[in-house]
Each structure stands twice: as C-alpha cells, then as structure tokens.
Amino acid sequence: MSEDPPSYPWPAGSATGVGSMPGTDPAEALAVVLGELPDLPHLPELPGRGAGADLTGRTAALLVDIAVETTPGGWKLAARPGRDQRRAAGLLARDLDAAQEAAADWAGPFKIQVCGPWTLAATIELSRSQNPALADPGAVADLIASLVEGVAAHVAEVRSRIPGAAVLLQLDEPALPAVLAGSVPTASGLNRVGAVDTTVAGDGLYSVLDATTAFGLVHCCARDVPFRMLMQAGAQAVALDVSLLRSEEEQDALAEVAEAGLGVLAGVVPSPERDAPAPSRPPREPGSGVLDLWHRMGIPARGLDRQVVLTPACGLAGASQAGARAALARCREAARLLPELIEEGAG
Image (cartoon, rainbow, N blue to C red; front, side, top):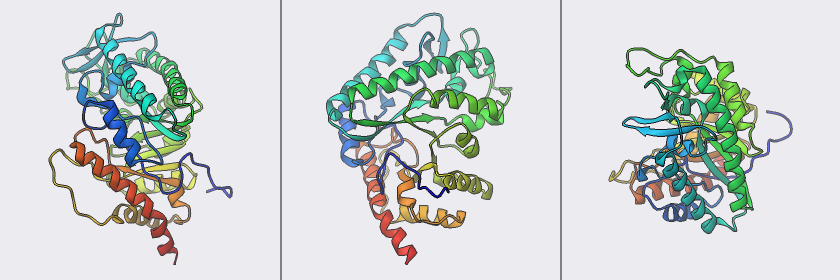
C-alpha cells in the first residue's frame, strides 16, 4: 500500500447492505436501511414487486435509446419501448421519490446499485433470437454505450434528490466470471457463448465506472471474482462473499487489490432464508473472520476498519422482514466491534 493512506468515502467501522431487500414498500425498506446502516445506507431494491424490479429490469429502465421487453424467461431487446420498460421506470421513480422523502437531509455516503454491463449482456436476449445479447458484439457495444449514458443520468438524479449525498455507484456483476470463462449458455443450452477477453471486459467496466464522478465499486457474489481485472478497470472498491474465497490464488489476488488500497466490501454475514431461525452467533465473529483473512493474506491489520465495510454475503430479498433487519443489524454491530478486535490483535 502507498505511504499516503487511501481515502474512503465511509467512516471507520462501517456496514452496508448489498442492495436487495424483502417486501414491496420502498418507504418501509428505506426506514430499515437508514435505521440499521447509519454510516453507509443504500437505495434498497425490491425484486419482490416482480418484473421491472429485478436486477436486469431495474437497470433496463436506465437505458437510453434501447428498448426492452419481458419474455417468459426474463428480458429481451425490443423494437420500441413498451409497458414493461415503462413499468420498470415507474418502479425506480417511486424508489427515488421515497429516498428523497426519507433522506432529503442526509449528508454522507449513500450507495446505489445497477446491473453491470456484462451481466446485463448475459441476461438480456437478442430481439430476433433467444441467445443472450452477449453473443453479438455489436449489441454489447450498444448496450454499454446506452448504459454509460443512463448511469450518468441516474447518478445525477440521485444527487439532485439527495444533495448532501456522496454517491457510491455499485455495479452488480454476478455473471462476470461466467462471461470471462465462456460458460454463459446459448438459447438451446447445448452451447456456450465464447469467452470475452479480459481486456475487452475491463474496458466495458471502465466505460461505465468512468461515466460519473461517483465512487465506483464492483460487486460479484460468485466464485472466481476477477479481482485484478476489476482493479485495472478502475474500480475503487470490490464487494464479495468472503465464504466463496476457496483457493490460495483467489486470496492472493484479493491481497493484491487490498494492498493497492482499494476498498473491500466484505460479505461476512450469511443472507438468511425466509422463516429460517436466526442463528445465535457471537457478535464479534464476522469481524474476527475478516481479521483472520487479513492475517492469512499477510496484510497488516492497521487501517482495516477504514478499508473494509462489512455486509451480508449477498442480497436479502429472500429473507423475511425480521431476518433482513437482523442481518443488517449484525453487520453494523460487527463493524462497530472491528476496531476493538484490531487493537486486541495489535496488543
């Protein structure tokens, strides 16, 4: 890490959510987020409302000069905007209205999430076939250009509605490892779309991250997160499910990113399933797990509580209302205890 300590938009000992929450009421979800995550709240996503509130559809509402519509299996490119895209835009507008009402006087970091370009290309079908847009380089280029413009407008709108917010832009890329590995299936399921070169993938991510002055991070809750590529693409932080770090090679790649000063949003609290009993675990356990990971990677723990934000392992849409609140509260409490754990380790 450089001699000058990196600057992060969140205070030491912060926690946040990945994005999705249970329920259908944006005001209710915002009340939970603002109450449980006072240092780094985020704009909740509520996929339980159906098509248009899902990861792909929500971001499709931001696309400029590209139309989409729903299919039995998801979304596809369309000739002209229709009611599906208008519904998605309406749901997002209601979320922003709720955020403006609940957080108009908020001053500090505030995170928003959009689908990243490669997961978007892997989950939107071409208009004349059921193959993913990823299979057509021209369609991918058009999607990225449209997303760049749409994300810039979205960040600007969030800033206008919450003037005191220091906006963090999270690109959700759960399909990115599959895109790089060439394992995204074609429509028939018998073949796979060819692997995207890492340089091309990085350029696409860079285009979206560079579209605004927001602090940019990439979240991937899958195996084989391409940490080095994300760093080279201009991400200022990475977000991951820590439990999926299985190999020494993956840990080495994360260590390289951490030593370069990127922020790390560490998913350390399991996302609860609906109606599952709340686990009884020590509040220090999530922070201890991160501290152990830093020790295994050979990185000094000094400054860990500034660099790392604790989060659930992934989204909370599948949890009950009580379970989601408890998971966020557990993240907050673990983050609060992290400086104490670091001091004990130094002693």
